[in-house]
Image 1 (cartoon, helix red, strand yellow):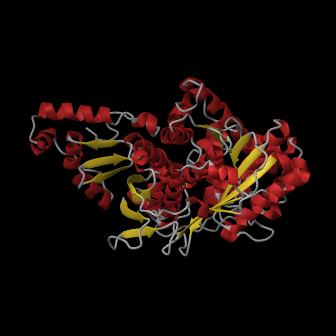
Image 2: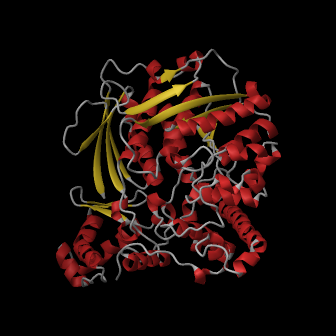
Image 3: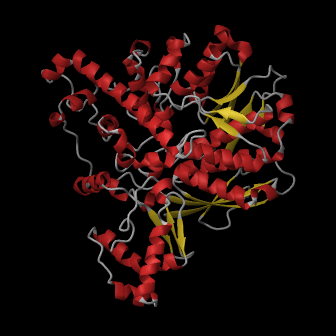
Length: 590
């Protein structure tokens, strides 16, 4: 796990390894700008929330600058995770130094991005950046709205907004983050169209620009974006005198099961995962000493059902103006969806399943979901992984759901008002409905293109051909294919328990936030070299006899076995936090 030191609010790094970040001053390299705030709202903004904005901007922009591990399957392990140490000046130091605040911050970010975090806060030197310099285009006091919600310009956020405006007769303040002017244009065009249709006095839009300046992103996963987004929502909510705000996202994406065996940890996004949202609520509540709630009104809906809500609100013709693709650099005037990323695949399945394909021609996508050749790189693998996942879910009984998809376990305890059992039942029903919608889209396309499939007239590496007859698929193998394929298949057949070994601090850090130290660390330290050696040679790990291990630890064999039992008990919480079933041989085999 590579370590990074990020020093914020300084003009020069303390060492060659440190990275300097600034939101203001002559060394500014992080943009933070909020538009269309009223002067009254600005007067309600305390220093603590300015601190939070800056912390969120630093975390988000550092996430983009610091690349993760290789794209090769065999290197996804420890190189994928990062150790991020932040030094940040704040105005309200006492609050940020509170151990409970720091624990909530570190735990939530750790689960969200699958990285290790530490924070050293210091008192900001005077004069600090005046808060007014972050806010541009101040407006006169506007009508007070019923709710504050986050708005990306995608299908889900637009569906949530029009449902609240039309069906629920609610007025909204929509907060939109953008790091590219292309993204802001999408959001502004949708807002303008809603206002043109009579919702002018029921709708306000606050765009927020947070991005790196003068530095090109090296990491595109953006796992911390929802932390930034939530912080923006909280700030606007409190400036509006409210203690809650909404995330509009469907429940399948919220849980976001990994599409393939290599998509673990940071590779499986957790942007609105229930555990993340409850962690953010805890952090915000501790910071402000008041009960903060994050609402997810689309939690129990599939993509098909969310998309149908746009049509139900009489806005089906605006579906084509929403954009879900996360690759704005590839967008053109007429094509703003690459068609190959998971967001594009999920979007297109939802739109087709809802029977709204005529509202968005396939030509709007750079690659058609079902018919185009996907033999380039991993394009077909991503699409097939998506279909295969939900095909497997469709064939899974309720009794096997948590066993076959243990990642669900980390979510079931984080739905307010529901027991874990009730949440599990509702999630099973949700995923079954989505699986059926994916199957319906494939089945309908097979009926429509049956003759072309029979005659092999479609590209062999199109998704529809691959689903119809996997035997004809020919994909150019990547370099080091045999070793990578073996590693990939191994990960498909076994649960992955990832950890980092810290010699200096004498700790073992597990994905999910669990840490071993003291006597438990000593046992791992005695075994780690054999593990490293076997991993390097890609061979089985050599066993160390019980007497030899006891001698190494300088304790009796009986004491060693007792300590080994305590170590196994110590990692049992991973059953819940990471959804990984553990037995006595999960971590240390005997």
